[in-house]
Image (tube, rainbow, N blue to C red; front, side, top):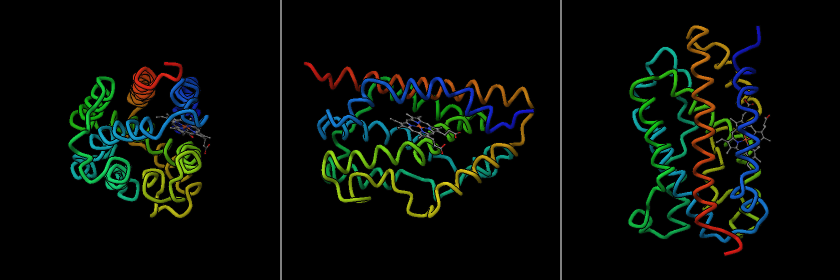
Length: 215
Ligand code: HEM
């Protein structure tokens, strides 16, 4: 039988393409957006990671989600440094979640609280993506808005404590393959992963509406 890591990757492939080719992402990667759009996007990420990384002490002892709680992945502190750079030391005062972001963060929090196996889907969708395509976004952001290489503004994309991302991703896939749930629960995790991608795409759509190019 197909391994779980292959299953979840294959099952979410279509949604990945959709997220990757969303208007907002294409405009961002095409260097067509101002730094304000990038800052607004980074603010949205803050809400998502706040939800992902709150309550992780409790999740760490869960048989299914526990092995995934690895502090070297945590992004909230890096996001806060980026936001201080992008918005100034008062960044918290202007912070607001788009409705799509609120819905995404709420769903993550719900899983973290009531369904640890479902939380794995959200963990996978964000962190494995950040370790992969995130590097392409970082490179583009540095070039477009002149951030120092791996410095303030793009620290979210820099995993200081992961020296070999490819090896880390291999280890992560092993964790997925060893996940301690039955086959039916694996199907539910895959379905939640698709939902996680859809929640991301909805945030991109909302950002695209806020930052239309030809307005
Ligand atoms: C323009 C934006 C994006 C680009 C260029 C991009 C690119 C990539 C690339 C090249 C990989 C393959 C890495 C590898 O095989 O080791 C990857 C994997 C992945 N990406 Fe993205 N990505 C983008 C957006 C996203 C978004 C928005 C999400 C979800 C929020 C996401 C989630 C993932 C996940 C979960 C994987 C791991 C797949 C697996 O191997 O299981 N990506 N991405």
